[in-house]
Image (cartoon, rainbow, N blue to C red; front, top):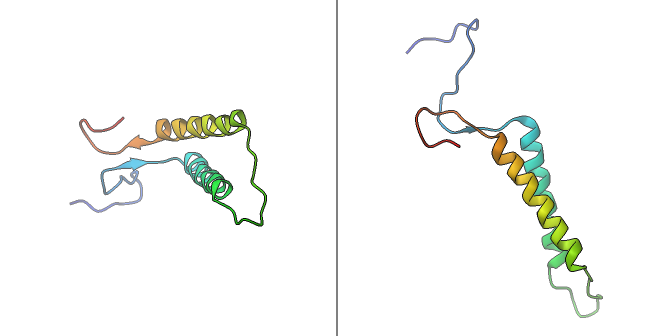
Length: 86
């Protein structure tokens, strides 16, 4: 195996997907938004009022999150050779 000399570009040592930084940020923001929705949907105690969410507003949140995840999936780049990538 050849040593990396610094003048040539480094290559990934493992096969998998590379995710650009902006796509990673979108992915972590989507995760955080899903956690917030989970907290909102969590059953409350009997002394707390029920949270009222309009179905259309909730659907809009899910559609937006799905769109964000579509963009992240499209931004992922397969580092391996042959089939198995996007």
